[in-house]
Length: 172
Image (tube, helix red, strand yellow):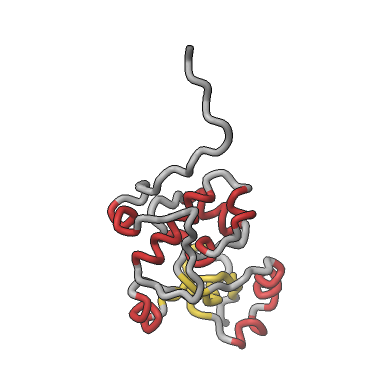
């Protein structure tokens, strides 16, 4: 009698060789994987890319996965950005920012409303520029110049933003 199995579906980044070579950096594509377990044996499981028949074989696991409403993305994972902490990457992913490209393309109104987001966006822009990524739109603006060479040597070398408002009074 064959052992009963159950499955868990999840999204796993898969390295895209041709795209990585074209862009000069690792580029990943999110792929749905299935991890199959044997009931009663917590130490035995195996994972592989999902096949269409897995949805029929494991309907409960598939329904649970579909309820999560996970958006698949292509690009450079946010976790590879220099200076990105695990908690910051989790927070960004919860806001729908899954890739370095997503972060670099964020609107000013979104960035300015979140503390620290301006610096993270500048890092993303500098990272993509350092990797020689050709974009249709120029992500840098005159207000936020980024020194790509300094960024490649030290991710914290981004200049502080200019202070706005009235100058401080001088001590008498």
